[in-house]
Image 1 (tube, helix red, strand yellow):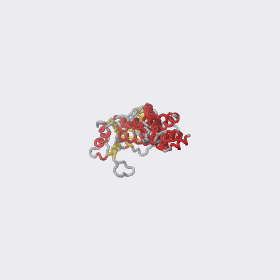
Image 2 (tube, one colour):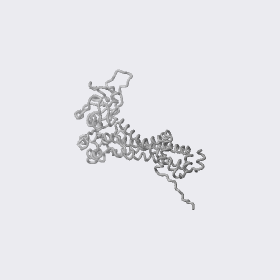
Image 3 (cartoon, one colour):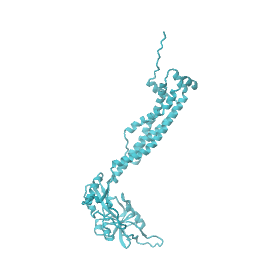
Image 4 (cartoon, one colour):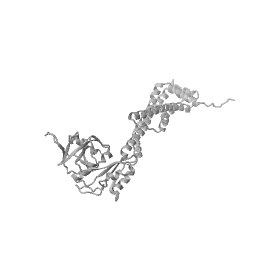
Length: 412
């Protein structure tokens, strides 16, 4: 009696790995170029995630150092006012003294735009009949503490102090823009400027301010000088610089300190929470660059699919021979899937390494602290392998669908 038992073809995992390795190494140049697409895609994704997180952390750090310590208090608008009339101010003249006593306040100062009745400003005239000698320049009144509160620095001269303010002395600080227009570059000779018929002595010229850039093109005079010369009624707003982490608390206390009877008359502007800013920055940067990384990864997947399909067409004879000696469709499909997944995995490993190096290099160049979630470089090779596996689905199905006789006939 004839034994009709069917012997199943055995194809172990070891055999699968060996066949996939031989398939990739048969054409090393093509394999390298194919893997390069995945390398670029994964490197772009890893570096994007890392740089976005690093940039977000850096922005928040700078935000903490400047914006997160800035609090502004101003009058809350009360309906409509008549044109040409000044809105009533509920900020007292001693606002700086009241606020500086609050725990967490580093510096505070008042600031007001002075109504000079559109008087033009000039300096000591120069004999130039063709040149302009009078200008329309904004004049601001400020308490001495404002300069520290806004981080102002001087090019030359000095800031006026509380003594100048109490004595109502006609002194002024020029912003660099105003100084250029008035042709004032030094103060050792006590240069004078004229607002209409009012004479002011320039004691300092600003270099820059971390806040309130409007002052860079203005003339700044003491509060009491503005009260005496231009009938300033009250401060318009208060600038406060706080310790890091104290802005929210000072925002709650400042209105009460300035207007204890009715704090609602004042509007306090405090910075948003740094955590929210960090998340928003990271989200925006991730959205932008992940699209670019995704496109690069898609290009890599298309390259793997194309090369795997070409490999199928070139190895039709081999496929037919293996089918003839007992290989099943499943074995053929597994081999080509393993090859494409292996190329994706290798590309993922190399791409993740390059991405991490890019993050470190950019951070070192910009003197940032590199930040990267630990799961990103660990998941990147798996993403590459999954990309290669998906890219190899159609070529592997195409290889498995070949009939042994047709494959042998076509491959010979």
